Structure formats: C-alpha cells, structure tokens
Length: 257
Figure 1 (cartoon, rainbow, N blue to C red):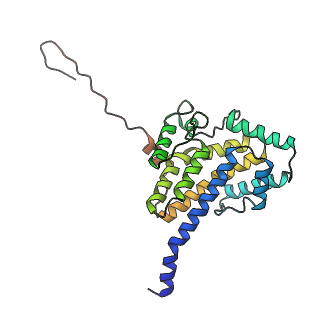
Figure 2: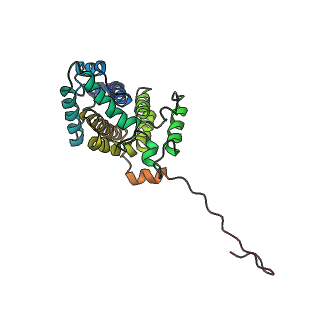
Figure 3: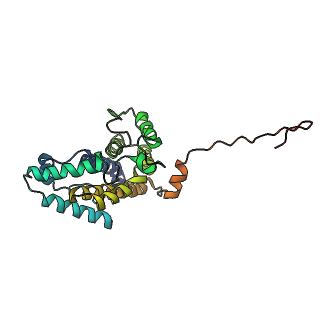
C-alpha cells in the first residue's frame, strides 16, 4: 500500500466525524424551523448564514432542490425588518399547522401511524424508549409528546454527534427507518399544499427531503441497503401470540378439538 493511500485511509474517520458533527448542526437548525414561528431575529440569523445554502448536506434530488429554492424565495420575500402583519401571518400559519391541526398535518408520529389517528399512542412510547435508552427525556409530554417532529430531529442530531462508532450510525439509521421516515414525507407533502405561507411550505418540504437524502448517505457509509417500506412495516407489526385452540369435551369421550 502506498503512503498516499495510507494517508487517505487515515483521513476517513476524521472526515466522517466532521460530516456527522455538521449534519447534527443542520438537524438542529431544521428542528428550530418547526419549533416555533419565526421572528425578526431568527429570520435575520438565517439570512446572515445564507440559509439554506449553509447546510452541510445540500439536497441533490429534484424534491430537495425545489424545496431549497422555495425556502430561499420565501426568505428573500420577507422584509429584513418584517412588520407586525407579516409576523402575525407567520404565527397564524404556525398555529394552524403545529398547534390547532387545522390542515390535518400533525407534527406527531402517532397521528400518522395510529389506526385511529390519535395522539400519544404506541409510537410515542416506542420513541420514548429510544430516548430513555440514551438517558434522555422530554420536559413535558403533555405539552409536546415524545414523538413530535422537533424531538425526533433533535434525537437524530444527538446520535450523530455522540461518538464515532459505526454502531451509533446503525442506530441512527434504524431510528429513522422505524420512526421519522415512516411519516415525515407525508407530513411534508401535506404542509406543502395546504399551509398558508411559502415559508412553512418550504420548511416542511426541505426537512423531508433532507432526511431522505441523509438516510441514503447512511446506507452508503454503512454499506447496508435501505430496507423497503414493506420490510419496515412488517418489522414494526406487533408480535402476535398464538391463539389458544378451544377444546371441547363430550361426555364419555376424551377432549376433542
């Protein structure tokens, strides 16, 4: 092996660590977009870093590129010092999506995966178990459940920024498969077509595209192909216990089935 090849190989862990660190930062920024309505300070901070071009992982798929363009246009259209009317419009759209569920695009996993579209169902407890296994807990599930989009993005950022072990990357991929990516695409699509402002349309679409492309990169790094949607749904089905076979008794005879 040549010295140059050795040098390149030795650089791989450092490059991967840097990538993970910066992607974790990206995810924290994306989580902020869904955490609250934007104010003048947040919008100015995003302009200063040339968001979304400042993202480490720049989407390359058509949906991702379209989402980035939409966010850029939305941010450009907002005044440097937006007046109360503009901020109130953003606040109303945020409330419509994230608080009042007026457009039926819940930011909570259970609503998408539960048969009755209810909050705080099995998905929430599964996600909570993930958090607890890493010594994490949310402040108050009654105000914002464990399976809220903001918390799931923050948890993935936590995993990526935790250590350099491939095992952690595998856990990250598994969590994305079993939880976030089972519903985020539907959320992004529905917000895109139903919300009232280009800002939140772009934020939802960009987040969905970003996470899909991140998962593709993890598949390449881990050298493990992504499971199909059908495989994931089969994996997540509750294990059924064998039903007891009823036994009938007839006088003068032994038990018969």
